[in-house]
Length: 556
Image (cartoon, rainbow, N blue to C red; front, side, top):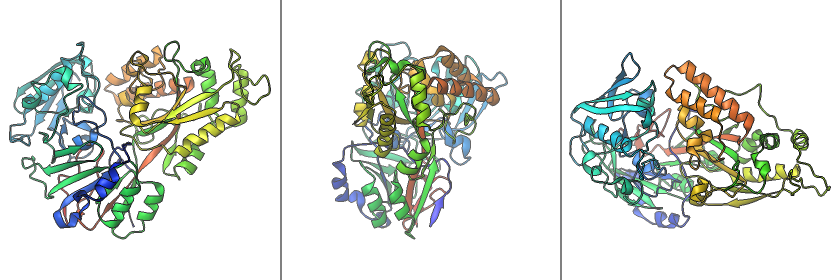
């Protein structure tokens, strides 16, 4: 058995309609890739459009066709550069210069230059403050408010000048798009109706040639890719509602790579000599969120707005049991906002960390005024109303599934301390509508079990508590001026030590206020076959932050 080491890896996963599997199992998407040299990948993902300005849910497949200017992979691996081949910052820590690959072309043969970079960022930046602000998708305006100037100095040089020191120019995740395709797309269309139908025009190694929502995306090799046309004949990215057909198809040879496997599948595939399995720490965190809203959109009881109530609930959650029983050990127990993989910012919060103790949870609830005064086994809130909390849950698009067993454990523990919980399972779209900002119809729930999988930057690590991100990253509606101030400083701190201090302070503050209880940081379980293609990654078989290894994968 080959195992990949624990490290960053592969892809994001989400729920979609379950009716797609029969289509795929009977289609040419599942013919043997050894025969036609087409790479076949199975994932649980639900892209709704190929327009990166309008959705967060299409990282796969768009990552294979577009480049970041820099991004995570380029900063970690010398052989995975994005649109820029090199970059530097001046002594003032404000002026950045990026050198673009000379002679690079878009997949339609048009020159890909620094002017496309300047266009992409200015297209976003110029939308700020308009009725159609491009703030709803993967390509969004976040961070651009701190940018003074972006321009192409020549075809191979981009200059970005920021208002204050920040690493945003290299740490943003904007996909660079071709000016000649997007210049005539209005902001209103870019944030909503424009679907960016295939064939895409990109600079990545694989270009989306066909897309069927809820079914598949087909790719052809980019003949103009900067290091040469890839050696494979193409790629099929197949979307599933569950992991069952992924595991089956890996064993039969109908898939070359599968991600989002269950622990049982992973264990079974590990004994197959033709298959290499891997598990990876990723940036996902699964959490229990409280609806902290007062007024419009509030939950069923004001207790949800009380930090003492939320803190007491934290003592009723056994993260280790969730990992051992619901995830069979394939996760790290939850602590604070920052996951262990983000080593620059992680803190175990040892001096303030809660421990599982139902008796302590009950004692704290009593002390906070939430008692069972009539002896019926159900506590009352401070207004004398018995508790009956609604917990809603779903797998958010772009995240690994949280097993329902974990939700059942939580409901059971809360029931033992006199807080009955009803559980409602939703699809990802319905969940997103429920946690939307109240002015957009969101709220009205009590508890949410969900997850996020974003980048290891201060902005994304702390986004769950940002007042500016209510209805998107901020699922609990919690706001705190001091937290916002710490986050704002951390986002622009160039000195890593100072940035670390600010992130830890913010993490401690939100932990004590407890709008979230972190449940776990799940591992990504995946596998690939070894008989059809070679040059899969060793530390990451398929990158989560780019198109690797599709530029170098080749038939055996």
